[in-house]
Image (cartoon, rainbow, N blue to C red; front, side, top):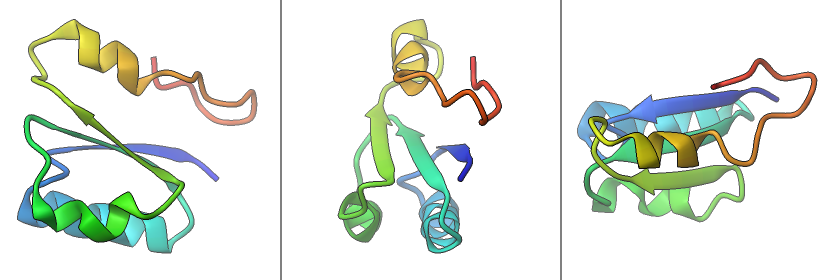
Amino acid sequence: MTRAVVTGASGFIGSHLVDRLLADGEEVIGFDAVRGPNLDEAAASPRFRLVVGDVRDASPAREMCWPPPSATAPACC
């Protein structure tokens, strides 16, 4: 299983990408400035985490990389 980061995850295209990645068995970190209703289904998955924040702020970006990926997965930071 790999970890994917989807920016704009609450939007139309981003939410569909999140759903597809989860269906393919991936771990998904969604990143968006808001939490929209498009992520209701994804939020039920233990392999999905939403980070709410602005991409111009470094603090949420650090949160996306915690916990660090396993030794076998590529690093996200």
